[in-house]
Amino acid sequence: MKSLDQYILRQMWTPFLFATGVVTIIVWLTQSLQRIDILVEHGQTLMMFGWLSLLIVPSLLAVIIPFGLFAATIFALHRLHSDSEIAVMYAAGVSRGDVTRPILIVTAIGALATLWINVDLMPRSYRELKREIADIRADFASAVVRSGEFITIQDGFTVYVDEVQPGNQFTGLLIHDYRNGDNAETYMARRALLRETGIGPVLYLSEGNVQRVNQKSGEVELAFYERTAINLGQFERNAGDLQLEMTERYVGELFKPDLTQAYDRANASRLIGEGHGRLAAPLYAFAYVLIAVYALIGGPYDRRGYAIRIVIACAAVGLLRVIGYILQGEASELGRYWLIYLPPAATIFAAMILIAEALPRRRLKTPPAGEESE
Image (tube, rainbow, N blue to C red; front, side, top):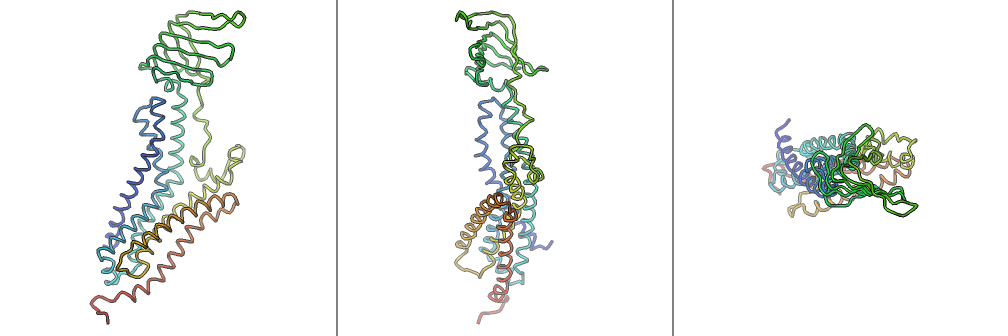
């Protein structure tokens, strides 16, 4: 690799990694706050909260990487202009293609990373996230860990615990079971122990009583016990049998919806459109970068700076992304999935044409080194 390529690569890598990292952390923190209920309501550890938060990072990177490449290109080329290095390069016979080549190398790496995330890493992480959350919410013990609060596990089944102890042990337990309407029961126990059995979780109650209302006489019947048990298996939700959303599916599953499933039949076109959208996402990385390249080295040299061009480039990138989202929705409805690839592909083609056409003008306007202007 040429020393010039290595130099420009260094100018690209640092701002790219910095911009991508900073934006990812900021968005990650805001998204993580939405998972704070898992920590509070279900008594999970900070380690579990961190793991759940980490699982959303791939989906953020899939969106942020193309914009990070755009920001890095703007920063690197503007810095080269500010230090007059671009002018020196042109005077030494370096072409615009030579300057663009290392930028496109970094872009290709970022685009491949985006493709891998969309095809494999994102759906895998989202599936794991959904499975973890389902396991947590299906765990009866985690639902009653908040001491001193009445918690409704299911409509008609309310639990109160004075104190939670290690090993799924509870003291001062009250359970009100009114799922059967008139046959409501209230259990009180000095101690309780939750154990997983072959028939599901079973709550063993010790030293307590159960209260029932006699439907004929209307009197409260009180029965004391030394030990009894309540089967909680009916409250368990199967965490493995989950409806996969679009973000949780691999590309192959998106392109071939299971029409035996009601969700897939109702959203078949959207699922296919999502698959094409993921494959088209890496093209946006090249489109954004070429917009930045044309903005900073495609036009004539401007002694007043490039602020206006940078603003226009940012607006163009934002508009391109909005158009892409709109067309993806329309293409999914119409079944014309090629429209999903049109915005980035057309932008890449147009930018390459404009950059190529600007090359002769740049060379004519840049005098050779040592030659005085007449």
